Image 1 (cartoon, rainbow, N blue to C red):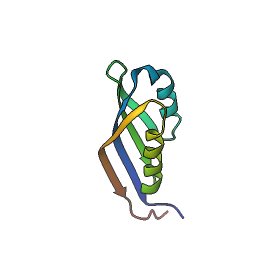
Image 2: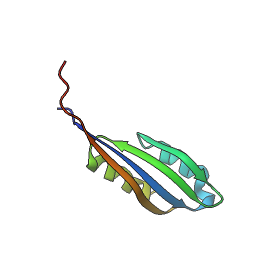
Image 3: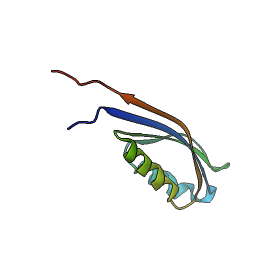
Image 4: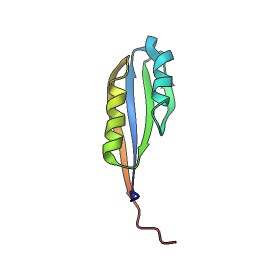
Length: 88
């Protein structure tokens, strides 16, 4: 059964600047994750995440919190889209 939900979230991640070299690849290794903006000097990243289910998105966000060097994760945007059934 296919989900008819789609979730997109924007996060502000505060991290230790010295951890950026390892943190960025770790973030990008999370499926459907992008980093459109980062400022190593200030230790800030904007992270976009997508998932088909809210629980999957929450798990991804929690995995960001657990990465080495992450000080804080703030959810600044969330959108849920529900689509009707597609008939061939």
